[in-house]
Image (tube, rainbow, N blue to C red; front, side):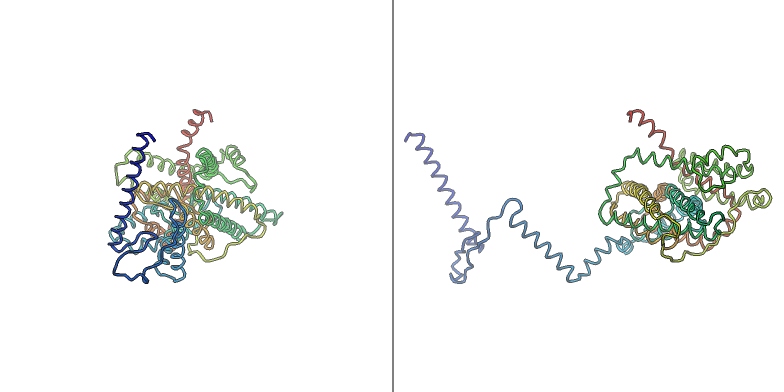
Length: 502
């Protein structure tokens, strides 16, 4: 053997010897501390040999997974099952806070936020109540049902929702989709009574039953999306397709409301389409009611000018807090009452509306209605409402530095619609304009939505009689103003699509 090999073998032997000595030293050290190594006996002289534990047969743990990780998973499962089987109150409290968020934030509510939340709720109510009265006409239902939609779903969402700023209630796009469904189902009712006409009460009960049925189905679909944790689906709908749908629906709404603002009588046929309504309006411009057009277009111009002034002077706090919709309603109602626009000038006014609180009634598909059409409309309403609501909730949660859960939001929206359908409400989802106002008012919690709902109750019990002289063309102007705002982003989106040659 060469000299190099002898030196190599001697160095290896030295290393092995030092390693063995280190192991022995470690064994002695651990034995002196009373902690034997894995698989070894303790050599402490104070313990008799026959009392020493048997050598451990535990297999060597692997780096990933294996025996140790499986053992930990088993311990976690057994611990969780133990909590459930023992009915630990802490577990139930945690579940309640997760599924019913009001049980978490209400006990810890700070009294210093009460004034801010009440002010925010009042400001949102000043916008919500006129919108609810206006949007009910889009659904072809009496005005009180718009307030029912602003009341019950908002109360339920205040208990179950995770967003502090989302304003729950009637929304323009959802209302027009509901109205389109109701109009289509009325064809079957009129066909059943042909060649005569159904009584007015029958038409109202049929329409409200259809609207409640689609609200129930929409709520169940939304609830199912949340329970199956499909909150990510809102990101799978492209912005271009959503923008196209919103723009098309907005144009349809403007066509319908323009006829009302001009005071032109509606077409007698219930089978008319938006294009036929547009042609009918153009061909009957000579029948425009001048006084109605002046009042309605004047209200629309005032709303647009006030909106432009607010966008110009964003730093002026008192200007931003002016409830423009409420101001228009108060002014036009006073002018109509003083000038007797309804009695002497033939302007169609709001009239007498019963303002009772909603009654519980299980929704059902009425006779002569097509269930397949109701289900398909409920799916469309669900997709549009879910996308809008979740986007708005995420946006304002990000701005105010708190977290919302998409799946829990879907559960809250679904339960709100399902419960609301039993009290005469049509489908309700989050509104961008009202949520923006709620954020601008610096709402601190979901209590602002509860305050808004309580003011809706007050309006049902005492406000509606004071709106007797309100011109209906003004409600059409309020709807048109909201819809025009939806079209503000359309030109930029179309230009972008042309730019990328989509």
